[in-house]
Length: 225
Image (cartoon, rainbow, N blue to C red; front, side, top):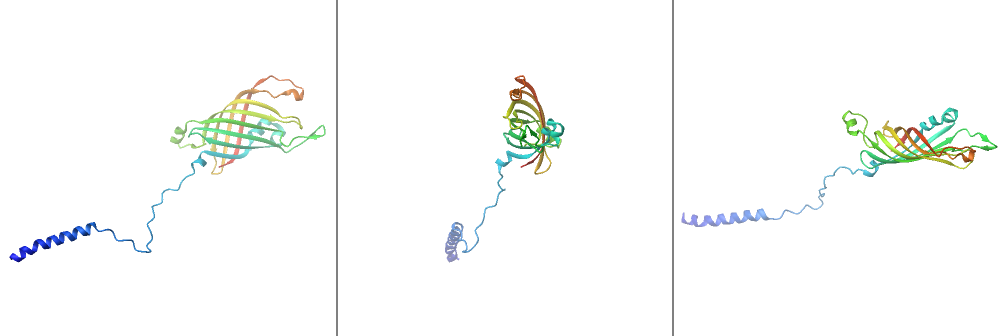
């Protein structure tokens, strides 16, 4: 019995030492040839820049309406291109260029009329209002989509039978709407009033006031991404 009492503390000491060594021993090395663990893939990155830029090309039927008559509806194709940049969810800057291609080119004093007798350039800003209310009522809204108010510096240009180009600059207030039909097609309709310089009538032997009230109408169907 006395021998057992002397031997028992030694056994407990050895067991305690072995347990401590097992807890602090380094982890075993990876098996050669084992595939390394890969980090979990996160969501795919998005191209934020492309979400803030809208490029579009199409036809501006509103210009054919303002031309009126046979020459307006059947004689010209009003091609339109534009770009719009989002400054925020409500404010954008945009530029638009229109060229009226003539399908009928009658002669005048032995000269054919121009292929592009008229066109326009516009630069401005838009405020897409009531976005929260439209979202609440499940109506069309989002980047470049909705009803808007705009301010545009506009220049109408025309050229008659090879004569020099005449320009009528103006500043217009606009109300409009832009909607997507599908992923690739959208329409943009706006109308506005403003003030600007009159066409220079000297080349036609006419006189005109230096300033005039202006109206603007655009009804465009675009391919836009």
